[in-house]
Image (cartoon, rainbow over all chains, first blue to last red; front, side, top):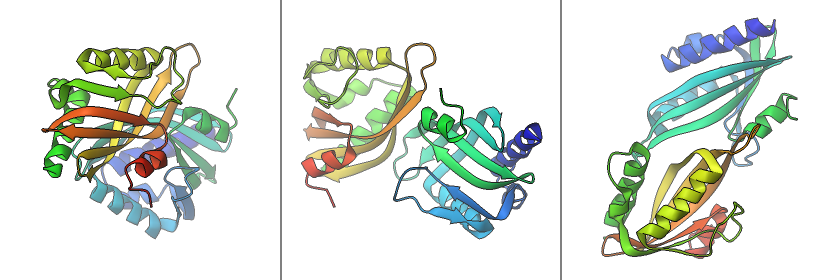
Length: 132
Length: 135
C-alpha cells in the first residue's frame, strides 16, 4: 500500500506542475486538510477541494513559473514524506527562489487526508516518526 | 531615492543567486556587516569590514552550511534602509546533518545608492522593531 501511496503522490505533483488542477484534486479526499507551513500560527488550514483550488490560484498570483520538483519519496506507514525543491520567482520581487521543502501527506484509502509543509527537515522526519 | 535603494538591493540578491555578476557592486568599499550576536556558528566575529570582510563572513557561512541560500520573501522600503525578509536555509556540515531553515531579516543602510552597513537578524520581529516597522 505504501508504494501505491507514493505513486498517487508522485502523479499529484505531475498534475500540479501541469496545472491540471482537477486531476491533481483526485488524489485528495473531499474534506482533505492542507497546511502551507506547519507550525506557523498565521497560516490557516485549507479544507476541501475549493480551498485547494484557491491555494493554486494564490500560488500563481504570488509566483512566476512556480514549480514543486519532488526529489525523493519516503513511505512511512500511513505517511508519505516528500523531499522537494520549490522553484520560481516571487512576483513583485523578481529574485529567483530555489528552496528545499518537505511535504508530509497522511493517506487514507489511497487518498490524501492531510498535508503539511515543512522548511525544516528534522521537523518533517519527526512528523512521520523517522527522527533519530 | 528609496525605491532606487530597493532596486539596488534586489539586483544584488539577483546577482548573488544567479552568479551572473558581482553582488559587491551594491556595496560601499567601507561596508560594515554586523551579524546577529546570537549567530552560533564557529568563528563568527562582531563586525566584518569592507568587501574583504563580507567575503570572509560569507566564507564562514558556506563553510558552516552546505547549499546555503537566502531566499528573498520581501524587500521593504524604509527611507535610507532596505529590509529584506528572507528564508535562509542550508544543510549543516557533517554526516547525518539535516536541512535547517530560518525566517530572518537583513537591514541594509544605504548611502548614495550603495550599502554602507548591513545588520543581520535571526529574528524578523527584532529587525522590524529596530527600524520602527513593528506592528
